[in-house]
Length: 181
Image 1 (cartoon, rainbow, N blue to C red):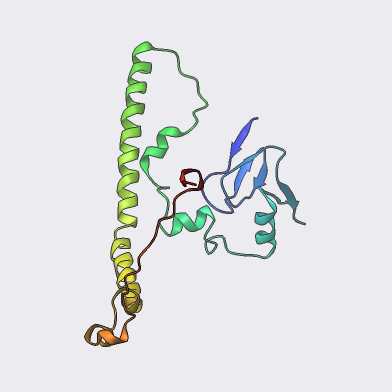
Image 2 (cartoon, rainbow, N blue to C red):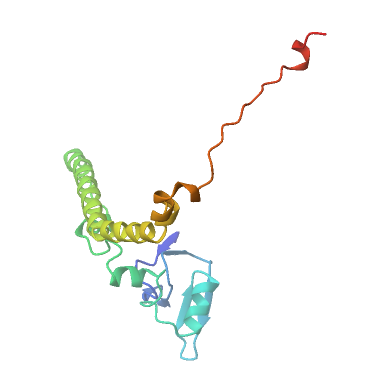
């Protein structure tokens, strides 16, 4: 059957060959991962031991930050965009038509351009408040470390408290091969 995609939800339950498949993240290849069968004959498949352990500990995937369910719920990923509908696998073969193929290829480029623009807009909206937070953190760090940057007023007013600036003469010695004997 090749590669089966699980989708973009954590612990997403789908039916495949009349088996319930459960996983936390991304995709799962056939004959990979761990299979767990419950007493009521419900079959759960996990992509790795991390997912299996979290399932056994009855953790909620919407609260685990690394799951797709969390990312979707908190608006971290662009999961509900309409441009993803075009990537669906269609099982019904279409009769070849040169015009349709040409229009499809043009549409693919246009859809890709739209997706990139929406992704950039989504990222900009997520990072909108980040600039102010970073500026505030930098200001706080500067206020805490100001003595490292600027001398206290006492040192500025009374120069005797600072170390004297002595000029030292430096004599350069000649290399041995240039010395005259």
